[in-house]
Image (tube, rainbow, N blue to C red):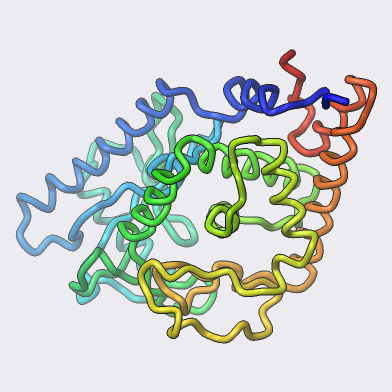
Length: 323
């Protein structure tokens, strides 16, 4: 029996609902680039300015952005010797510098939030989250993020993180980014149903890369999504998920007692799932079980309308069969 919902249906749904169009991507990148260029121009004409550099970050830079998302990320490297090291003082300090750069913007267009400054472009409606990174002169754009919980410094590198995912996308052109977008879309549906559901985008990216590195074939989206949810259901979080692109395997820490341990490839000390409690893991596994059951059942469902309903449990009510 040929399944009613196939790879082609998912491709059509992605193009119709999930993905940003090329025109949207280009427009949003242009807006973020305009802000980055304004910052870099200020740096160029102001010796010793508080900012060192600005780098595009987040889902648009990685090519994993969803449609209808109106917030984008820009990492601003700031001189650590000049900047406060604790939140919210650091964020307020960055806001004051951005006001210097954009004096014509109104007060409600440059807003200090918990861990970033949001620059709001009134015409397009796009929000750019400017995330401060403390820079101490290290190579490869290594800097330090300030923790939202305890003001601890977390080592990171926007450039290396982008190199990491872009390198994998060269190995898996088109399919890796698309599958990441599907599961980000799935997580969005889960959050609408359950306000306590937790599953951040960066963790989804790393899980997909882990599966691809271990031989998962990505070119059939039905099979790949079934395998993704099956991995979570079958105890995938019991083991450490880690990568050795930038550090030796001998430097990996022990698995420890974290409910989930997914390590940042740039910094083994950073568990991306650090703030997931056992209840968060159980909720995530339960949601993955529901998605896995829906996909496997739809594969053998004789009535097309029922198969569509099962996929709607995974991708939301906007999902429709294309053929």
